[in-house]
Image 1 (spheres, rainbow, N blue to C red):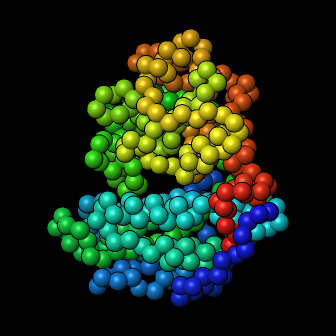
Image 2: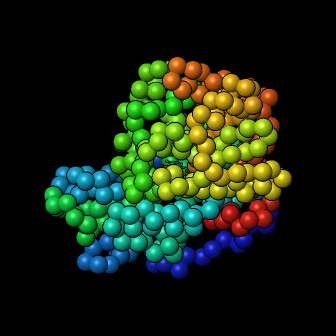
Length: 360
Ligand SMILES: *Cc1c(COP(=O)(O)O)cnc(C)c1O
């Protein structure tokens, strides 16, 4: 392993442990995503213009008044990342500094103060250190980590908030096998628009996508493929993941126009594909081009990338009244190969030459 030595936190953190861990009662390899939460959470408050002291405490409800502006106006942003257990038992984080920086980009867009990156990372390390027993064994799942940052102003005026809460909680899940999915290209709804919030992770983006998702499900698809707002022509994302196509042996993915979330998985996949000697082109990708390639049998692969499932495969794309069927996953080369490489690095099976993996 070429991962660096564990980093010692420099932030002063209060630790309030659970009297009795719930860990033994849980079979980690069998836990469904989001069904069980680890013993502890990190909390940190911002008030009177400054951050307080981070605290690792038992996971549980927060007591909040109903008039807080996070609830009224959606002043809330979040992140998602994972910890894996290496074959030697280490706890491994994947590119956590990128999540810390992206959280602050999201915060800035909602006029929220930045969280010092060192406080985010030291708090995260302290939490993972204490709850390391909740990371499933190597190859048997991962620990999903959810940093969440929202306003707690007791004010129903629409204005930037003055009080905030930052929380990190975690949940273990067993092997995440996601079967190849069918997606519906929607022309009725859009996820993002120029000048909006599509390139960051405010809570409200996800609420706004739910109806399209529901309608996709009603028509037998698992998710939505989003087009750009202005032309309803250029592919942007699939559900809450980035998307890649393989056409004529070349990999193409929508270029980051400002309405696409710059996924850390997307960036990692682009880097690895290029190292594998493949051409990865980031450009506008029109749905007409995808339809033409699909009809002509030149669309060899389509896959989606995001933290939860890493790489998931798309087997059918429905646009207007046409179904584009893609080859079976067994007959695909590029998606499965890059998935294996990436998962290998995340789980400590493969050396990390990029400085992506951090040992806690
Ligand atoms: C979080 C997210 C992604 C994936 O980002 P990762 O950093 O790879 O997890 C993609 N699209 C949207 C809309 C997202 O919210």
